Image 1 (cartoon, protein in one colour):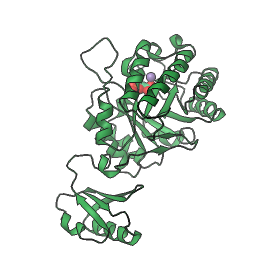
Image 2 (tube, rainbow, N blue to C red; image 1 turned 135 degrees about the vertical axis):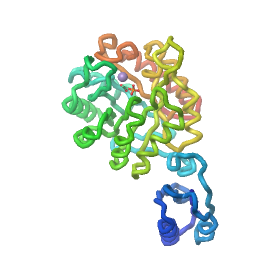
Image 3 (cartoon, rainbow, N blue to C red; image 1 turned 90 degrees about the vertical axis):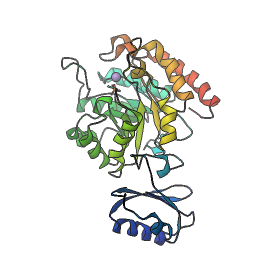
Length: 338
Ligand code: PEP
Ligand code: MN
């Protein structure tokens, strides 16, 4: 159930509605947008008498949410969520954000060279894996916390925000000083215990779509984080597994406008994992931007062919800088900035 308050509702009226909802046995989530406050009820909402809430002072309207996801649905924040970062960057506004970096942090020289390039190209987010979910246990698994320290130092040197993958609950606490945004990888999209725990933090979470997950399952996974009170969730389309073998995954560009329609959460397109092919990253980055993505995530490396992981899909630094120029043209064409 969603209760939309009138624009001029007072704090006392809002508190009274929250109290009435709580008394009815549901959990209340509140969001105050530029126009109005919205209160969402989650939990046992089936027996609620909507008319009872509709009559309370300051209430504009009340309606049931038929979708199984309640807090990630558009109705909770019709104007859209904008996630803000300490370096002043935002994801979800008019400006399209770019998150770039190596698949894995390998050494100081590598991550510092990449950070300088990210800054030069005008992007605000440095991403690098330190805990890597590899298909084979014999592949490089990442440098762990020392890798995050390098990522953080390189980002600090250039005023960038950091993004890195968290694979298990025990990593959350030690990662906190070094990351501005947790990434939950495709393989962990339905690691519900991890999602719940991230809902208890107040750090943004970039949640990737699982390789065989529907849009609805992605939204339900985000709900695990939101229902803990962490509303800073960013959804990521990174390709799904289909019968097509010419690309590593099939990047579902249509999921971007679908998610934007169903949800208020910002959406990121990841053409690197989405295609698995360096030559397909630029066209799919452009397509994602044109389709309404709020951010793009791309893997870059000074010696891309020699990257320890995901080399085949990693852009060289000069390719990335050139692509940023081209993306700016597309951003302008669709009424955004970059
Ligand atoms: C990654 O971002 O490097 C990664 C492993 O991504 P995904 O979870 O989408 O496979
Ligand atoms: Mn990767």
